[in-house]
Amino acid sequence: MNWLLDLSPDEWNAVRLSIKVATVAMLFSLPPGILIALLLARGQFWGKTLLNGLVHLPLILPPVVTGYLLLLTFGKRGLAGAFLAEHFGIVFSFRWTGAALACGIMGFPLMVRAIRLSIEAVDRKMEAAAGTLGANPLWVFGTITLPLILPGLIAGAILAFAKAMGEFGATITFVSNIPGETQTLPSAIYTFTQVPGGDEGALRLTLISIVISMAALVASEVLARRVGRRMDIE
Amino acid sequence: MSVLVDISHRLGDFAIDVRFESAGRLTALFGPSGSGKTTLINMIAGLIRPDKGRIEVDGRVLVDTDAGVFVPKHKRRIGMVFQDARLFPHMSVASNLRYGRFFTPAAERYSDMDAVVDLLGIGPLLNRRPAKLSGGEKQRVAIGRALLASPRLLLMDEPLASLDEVRKAEILPYIERLRDETKIPIVYVSHSVAEVARMASDVVTLAQGKVVASGPTEAVMQRLDLLPTEERGEGGAVLDTKVLGHDEVYGMTVLGSAAGEIRVPRLAIATGALVRIRIRARDVMIATVKPTGLSALNILPGTVVAISPGEGPAVEIGISCNGATVLARITEQSRHVLKLQLGGKVFAVIKTVSFDRANTGAGLPVEADG
View 1 (tube, rainbow over the protein chains, first blue to last red):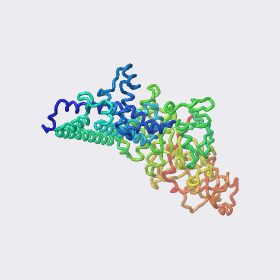
View 2 (view 1 turned 90 degrees about the vertical axis):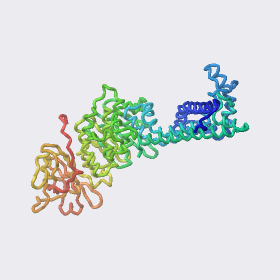
View 3 (view 1 turned 180 degrees about the vertical axis):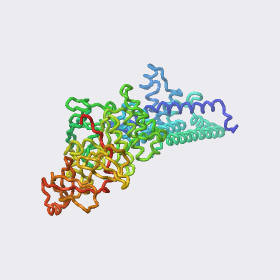
View 4 (view 1 turned 30 degrees about the horizontal axis):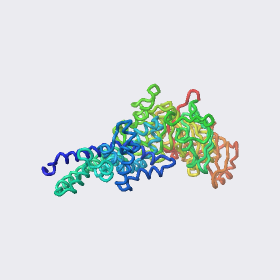
């Protein structure tokens, strides 16, 4: 145990940073994730197939390509990057925020899929019943739809978190591998494997990474079960 | 209080073209499945938008396609009880009950939680989850939930159709209490002669998307030819009666009706209470002379006022007994042998034991203006 936790400051930074990046990526992709999942599950509009394809793109593209595209659009000279930096002071390139953006985008298709499935499983007759009781569409969403899709929401969020914990290709392409700023767990492990005698450090971080991912998975199972028990859907 | 529906609507090959108006306490939309009843009630609730027409409840226009009016469902304040209850699975029974109440403006809340819980007998269920309730309990909670939103009108879409006979018998008295103890008018969709005859004050009979008869229950239920084929055997006269007394020795109740005294198996209701009975046409025999040496206890003198062909070898005979019409289904052969003709004096014979729980229900209190 001591051996496992006897980390250098840089290694601790990598652990902390990974958790921070994954959490931020997960939280910020939840609202757009729910919105896009709703659109895909219920919307009927021109370009739905295109939107679906775009959302899934990070899943099928090589991560390096996604990272490079991010660099082109959200980099210092990128269209969106320059705009955000100038007007809102948000800078992504070579910052931990960029790592969170890359991780969020890579986990987005997984999150949307999980939420979309749970929205499609909602009995719309329940929503109609709530409407006849006086609830307007916003209230219906908040009091009926949202609670009914909660298990899917949790599953989607945890999937996105786990994906973010393991994201490597897009992150390292977009924001590089700067200790203390953008060096997440996978980048740190990669760095260890590139230097002589780094095996022990790589193994240590690998074990920590397994522990964190397993903990997230168990937490989601427990949460989903508690929500499920509360609902007792027949 | 009145409901006015005047709409036309197409659903693929099926066309609905309906106009009716009712001021009844419980108006039944009656007809076989596929006659458009449920579509119609969904339009009143605001769940379906009619192609063309007008819907008014109590003078308030909810739909008027010519003027471009369509009040969304959450602003109609019309309660709906669905066939499948549709209780929210993630809430307790108490939260389900309070749901509609929350959205009702405080000034317009007229229904009281305790009174409704008491009326429907759902007090012991409040802390339970919907999944743990029986079908009958779910339906009672669904009725309570709709009532607590203080609706202007209560719609019930075959609320008993998915329940077995025992559960039906459990809920019917609650709906009767609802009809008699609250002031909310009810529109009730059903394909069951037993339910409609027992509970409705007014009936609108539908067939293939059209209204084929409408009016007070006793009058509409006389039209045996309009009943759905599978329900024909259940058809018969509907009489409103009063309990005159009980025969404790033989376990019977004596009911007073316009047609005369009628003996039925003992009912657990007090003397003076109102009871509505349905006398199935197939349970009525006809005699041309007053029978003696006969086991049947109810022998009502009357005059033949209608003879209409029934199904197969049957004819349906309407007998006016002192103003109240009793229907009898007999064979064409019997009619021929007895030489029955309009205006002929006859006796309608009904066995006491032909009455059961399904065709005796609480009668509608007579309204002062009716």
